[in-house]
Length: 228
Image 1 (tube, rainbow, N blue to C red):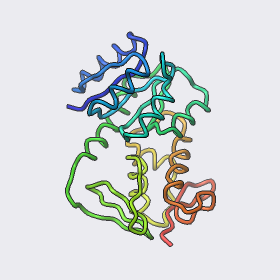
Image 2: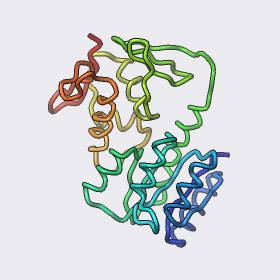
Image 3: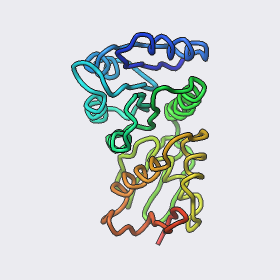
Image 4: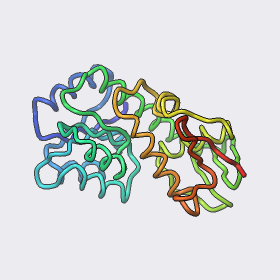
């Protein structure tokens, strides 16, 4: 049974989310402030964290920063803060997704399912099949990646994006396609999430992210992988 940690200081919202996710078969853990949420996320084998931004003792951005130092667990930020800068900050800090209150429980559940499915797939083992493109190599089952034989430290979503690009070098991929195929659900929000994820991936793949050699922007169309 997959475990979801809800970090939220409003009990009514915790109860609403927990009720809907328990109906889907998830095991729920709860935390009502940032410090407690960080401690529970680090101490337990959690499959996904639902993280509010406005929390007592430690805000959600700080929880996420500290969590990302040791864990790549999927984090879905749930907050009333709609400003674009807050969304971008959350994504750049390492959030996998961002949803604002009031939210549809159907939409929230769909996003949780997509991220949980990816998380559970990650726990598989074995040598598995490999993919290559330019200096990059990925192992699909071990979910490892390397450049010129040197390991790359990629998040789950960054790994999925790299695999998607390696599968079709030279083909322009739109942001909508990436959201559908990599995020794994119909997206209701800002497609800037894709741009942020691309920027973070470039920082790990490229020698000079400002002048990318492999992950190229086709202005007005999308992105494509140049294997060189």
